[in-house]
Amino acid sequence: AQSVTQPDIHITVSEGASLELRCNYSYGATPYLFWYVQSPGQGLQLLLKYFSGDTLVQGIKGFEAEFKRSQSSFNLRKPSVHWSDAAEYFCAVYSNSGYALNFGKGTSLLVTP
Amino acid sequence: KAGVTQTPRYLIKTRGQQVTLSCSPISGHRSVSWYQQTPGQGLQFLFEYFSETQRNKGNFPGRFSGRQFSNSRSEMNVSTLELGDSALYLCASSLVRQSPEQYFGPGTRLTVT
Image (tube, rainbow over all chains, first blue to last red; front, side, top):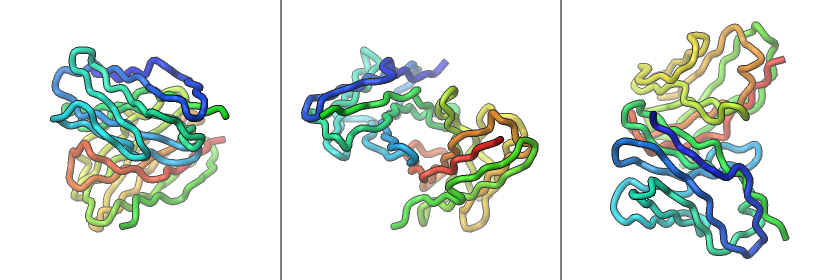
């Protein structure tokens, strides 16, 4: 069955430190991969996407993600975290059989001063 | 260009009642998908509408239904509300049907008492 796993439920980082959020997927075909961010009481904002080509993709707000087919991973990174990055982050895979986004359970990011 | 709008933003209903939520997609987008977000189940796909027809459906009971109008606006209806229907309901629009690139609205927070 297709699935998306975000192993870390909560992550705490200091402001200015680097960040890596993990995402693993189980999917038969070449996936369409996404990272979304959700601030409290808000909808989902698309950070970046991977469809094909260069496996390192750049997104908004200084985020990047790397697709590693051999590891079935699509980890999100940011070199220096800002307090405003505190939010819930969701990894998603688009299913070409169900024609819908399958989301991970999310990782809650806390940024400390 | 205006984003996806959802009304109302907040709603409180009593068990057994029914509710209708509305979604207006980005101008020019013709497909609307609905997702339910709960703390326990996370983000789950409800259904997709394109050209006023339901094109795809997730694993939800028949109490959950929807429709789409000729201007691409969509409504979602939940009948005989249960406590477990309390959730954030997110609408996403895309340019064409069955598209991986979806843009989300702010959601409607439904509380069933």
